[in-house]
Each structure stands twice: as structure tokens, then as C-alpha cells.
Length: 237
Image (cartoon, rainbow, N blue to C red; front, top):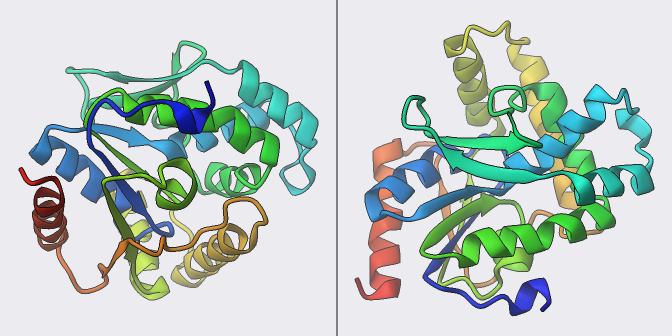
């Protein structure tokens, strides 16, 4: 059975958009509110980027065959840990790497890796399987266009580069990390946007039937309330 042929066993919500628009926070809140499973597809690509970094592979010139083989062999799974917050954790070959994959270096590596056709093919079936298991919300950059073009509700979140840089810096400071300058953070975000939008395979773009929301001047609660209302209307619940 192909990835696209995996039957859905519940409703699927697709949330796409560039980094820093609030996708992760919104998805987590919506999943809790609607009692859906949260599938962070970006964490899958970040996990492969972490494996590459540990092997010392050159991020500027990845060996596509080697990286594809890593993706095919890696055992990736999400688990819920009641003793940790957030409870949804990502494991790679049995190791919890949830915090290890949240660095600027891994983020840039994931962007490059996600442009490799073999890696996307290796992870597509996993993403479909996770999303089809029951009511689910998936966040990423090509969920509504490639992974789940048949999603029951689709959203595309946006925000200005300036606002996204501020959010990312605040996030890093809250985590006790040493953040780069504001200008450097803006540069990194703009570079990531360019890579994601211009890649040949599954580029970042809004699905024709997705609801676009600019989160620049909205609070998390406002975004969640608007999306939850749209989802309930679409699903008739």
C-alpha cells in the first residue's frame, strides 16, 4: 500500500507555514483542546539532521544517498511522557532527542535535508501512518499540499520576519540559551524561508484550500480560538 493509500481513521488537520509563526504552540494547544493527536513532522527531519551532525556530515554538501539511507534505517517515534512538559517527545533509535533537535544548527540542517527526495520519500509513509491513526493535527511545511492533500481542514500561518525573530530570541532566552543578535536571527529566518520556498521537492507554499492567518498581531489564544472554530465548523462537531 502506498503512503497516499493509507486510510484515515479520523479527522486530519494540516497546519503549514514558515518557522516562527507559532505553528508548534498553536498545534499543541489545539490538540489539547480538541483531544487530537499532535504530530510534529518537522521533528522527524530535525532528528535526521541530528544523526547527520553526529556523524560529522558536511551540512553544505550532504551526500544524498547516505542521508537517505540514514532516514530509511532510523527508528523514529513519538511518545507521551506524563512526567515531562511538553509530554509529546520524539525518540530516535530509542533515545529521547526532544531538546537536542531544537538548535539553529539543526534547524538549518533539517531545511537542507528536507529538500532531499529520498529522505522525503522515506518519511512520507511514516507521516501518513501517524496522521491516519485517529483524529490528528500535523504541522509542517508541506502537510496540506503533499502529505495530506485530503486533510479535512487546512491552515497556513504567516508572520513578519521581524516578529518571528523577536519570538525566537525570547524563546531562546527563556530556555537559558545564548541567542544571536536580532539582526543575525532575522538573517537566519530569511535564509530558512528562502531554502524552504525554493527547494524543488515539496516547497513551502499555501494549499489552495487552506485558511491563511497572519499571527503577527494576534495572541496565541486568539489564533487558537479562530482555528478551533473553523475546525469545528468543518467537522460538524
